[in-house]
Amino acid sequence: MNPPKPFPILRLPFLAIEEVFKAMDPIEIINFSMISKRTKTVTKKMTFSSKYAIDLGIYETMEIAINGTNGLVSCIYLLTSNERMDGKVGEYENNGFIERKVYNYSKDPVEEWKQVCKYILDIFKRQAIDVLSMTMDVFVDQNVSIIDFLNTNVKSVNGCNVLQLEEENDVDEHAAYLLENIKVNNKFQSNLDTKNVNFDMKIPKNLKEFYIKKADWIGYDKLLEIDSVRTHSMIDESFEKMYNFYLGTKDLNDEVE
Image (cartoon, rainbow, N blue to C red; front, side):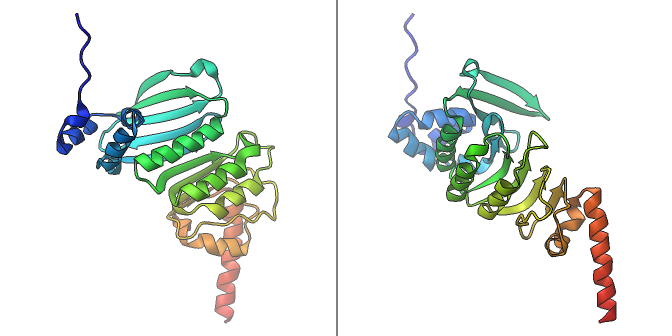
């Protein structure tokens, strides 16, 4: 039996090509775009990009997630230094959504992650991303490089999570540098164990939600920045006591005036 002939997708009318793209998952779209310059050009002309949101994750394994909406497949592209994971694909159901994970081995996961990020942001026509999650004590020596990359290639993020694996690690300086160089639109969450009570991390403006694990570095000026989003915030006990103290002092001064 003769092998099946390749399907001549590029010979189809534009609307027919769009229908083919609607049946593809994000990884298939990316793979198709990499075939040639022509397939990349065709891919970028498609209108599928609005159906997906992009998340970036800096964990022990570098991640780029292309999350479908309206029941579409979500795909997570993972770059790992574990050679045994190369080429592995896993498919899972997560709250009714299909989630597909694709692993790729790299000798330098951080640098390759940057290149893949640029490519995916280009293909999916994104300047902003949905969620950025960064574990600050995994690639410490490359944190500044990662943050500079984000500053250059990402206009803003809707949500930002900063994390750390080991509480004893001091990542205050890099966390502050991140917030100086990335615009957060809606939600910020810090799970850091801050070491410096004089820590001066920029609080993103106009947040809708603000979550913080350890807040003993926050003084009165920072409280004024946070006050507008406090009704949507989860804060630790030390922050709550400090906030109430400052709030009481502020109210008392208002009455004296």
